[in-house]
Length: 155
Image (cartoon, rainbow, N blue to C red; front, top):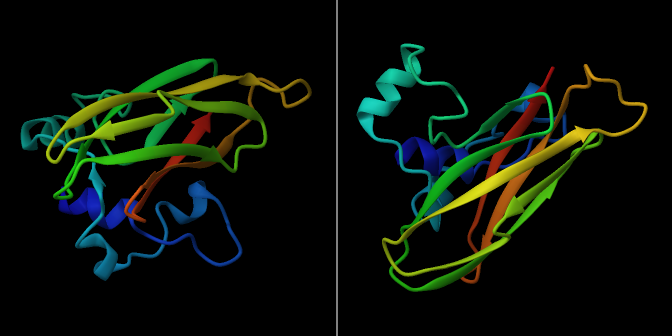
């Protein structure tokens, strides 16, 4: 959860080099103390992921890697605030694929967990089947919190 908080509250780097070059961005430790949402990952799942026994799409990491499109990846988030909050999502920065989040909004009680799906369409016409694309999915909380994850669509 600490890793999730550090990753999801990071700022994009100046010049917007994209998720392939910047990852999550520049860490903001002060913001990580109150992220709003975290991406819970059980220690056993983290070990399986690091050992290569759990695929990147199956591990509930604070990033998404999609091989080609169309495809979809499911993630879980948990409200770590002390209040019931509404969170809305936005997918942005993608130039070759349509990317959406379903459901687009969540209302979570303190400690409540919910799943969402990142859906990636086939490459846009003219982009080619080998098109690599990247962007972010950001959840904005009614309390002003923002958690952002990098999403990479590879070949």
